[in-house]
Length: 311
Image (tube, rainbow, N blue to C red):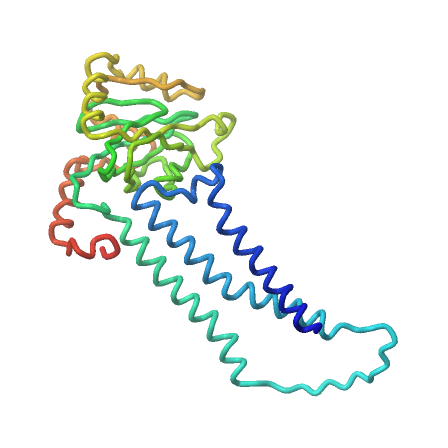
């Protein structure tokens, strides 16, 4: 009878844990568990796999621990002599060492496979490039193909891979759009690449994920995904109506302080490379368009049927 009650207790505990994990994704606050693009979806699948593999170890260990503490607890009036009979079991040794090793191997394989797969676009649609600079305490987005720039928001075409090329003009920061993919550091003197894509139109929350001082809490931005036609209209409107970003304008923008959303119809040529050079980086011999062409050539040589998981 006691064993049956104990079994029901373990079953209820397991149900509570699984429900907490599953239902946590239903809250609007947990946007990282609501992927809206192929990159975020693959990373979400990896999170789920990691949780399941960890649960395979943690839940049985906790259950056995509770059972042993309850079953072999000392009771009042117990006068039995302490005469342990130590022994070992090769089978049990293989089990409790073999299972964790197998789990680590599986997790390591899928982590490496997903990580390398996300170094390339997740579809064969022609991508766009956006150069991102983290400032104190704001974000500058440059569109080299359209020769426009924005501050604290970026518009992208839905269903199109976007290569964000990241750097910092000051402190090291981190660029993160939770519903589209994981974060990537922005570092002075370096250009880091991050592929993201939005499956459908919408506005997605973005933020700096690395503490950078007084204005860090306000260093947020929006990524607005629109249809390709709406994106083209928006880019054309910015080109025709917004002021130009001059060298003096950029220097003022780079000063410490907060900023509202802004648009610029143009910016100085090689501004992104100059920002990198000014912070100790080497001048980039190839511009972003040439890098994109190299990536597209790699894609053409790849097996399109296995592109989503294979490099």
